[in-house]
Length: 493
Image 1 (cartoon, rainbow, N blue to C red):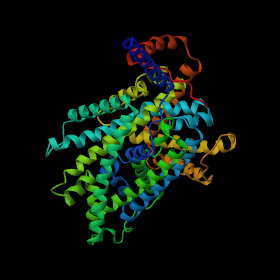
Image 2: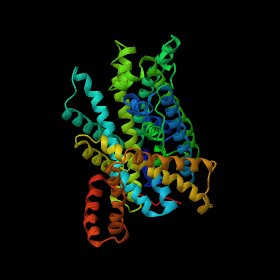
Image 3: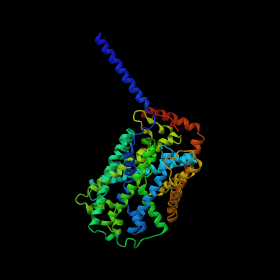
Image 4: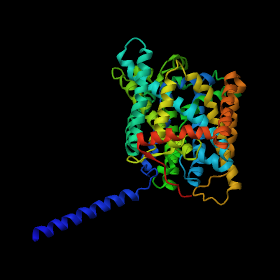
């Protein structure tokens, strides 16, 4: 009798624990989970902004202004503009706490068409192409030690870049925590190389290496066109300051952590960029810097020898960290666009087991791999990068518009109206600068591509042709079963 009672009690205990585990699973709603804290938020901003640019091509700013003094001023001014832009996005992000970056803000302010054109341009060109270029930069640095004295074969670089995209896509599809943990590790690694370069520069300055800073404004090429293009190149290195707005729904306490991450992260990057450039000029003249293929490697060879191998290793870490941050955030744009019906519905589905937007991330990775196949897409990115500033201008202008049209929205952060006005004006100037300075047909093709999205919007979103629904229905069903994903629950307003 005693044994039977024990067995009964055991059975009841097991049933209770099973019920509790089921209830805990049910309590996790089928939406993206809030798993990104303040430290991870700062790491995403710093880790995405500091990629390959500051280590490889700061010479593009110097080439446009021609002297050390204006070059450092431009880098500092780019940091100020990025901080002001990020403050505008902080107000937008705490006012409209939805993932997807510019997309939900354009949707709220101007309706579905501008939002669709943004997602069309971002998903098919700007985001995956920049992801591909970052991975190609990683592949070049990672493969260089195995081919001393010559350039690595193109096939090796492309295969390694494709492998990096597959690994990063897999990591971010498996777990939000794993993706943010990887981001934290690589951000720590890149901050090590940043500190090595900065400390080396300070030591060299203390030893009296200041000759390159004498008469630093002599021979400067100061004109509206040159300054605009220098800003253009500098801001490209700062691009990524809005990345946290893509994952607002996954931030713990977004009203606190979003603005704090921005206020800490962007100025930190700005200070690092200026100090790194000062360090470069302690050891290289303007001419030497312009002739260098990879400025950070040249710096390492002159200052850190025989430990100069540290630089390409940590630059590889830096680029892979930036690629991971880009994938982590941009996958959410695909997810939100799918949720709003502006992309295939399956792209808005969430993994049952992992609570990640796996289909969106896989789609993003697949498009990025396609961009690796062509020979050289750096030129393509340069032509399309001005499209990014079209949408930055439009998004910040949306903030101004909603101050008057959506007064009922709660604004935990409210910045002075002069800041978004200033950012909008500068963004418009940045869009017009390359067209006025160096007009090319490619800019027209870019504008036509953006407007071409309107045709797809009318055909597939506005009219919703039946034959398109008949084709996409079975595809969605099979992909849903294959990837074990389900539609997200409605986000409470």
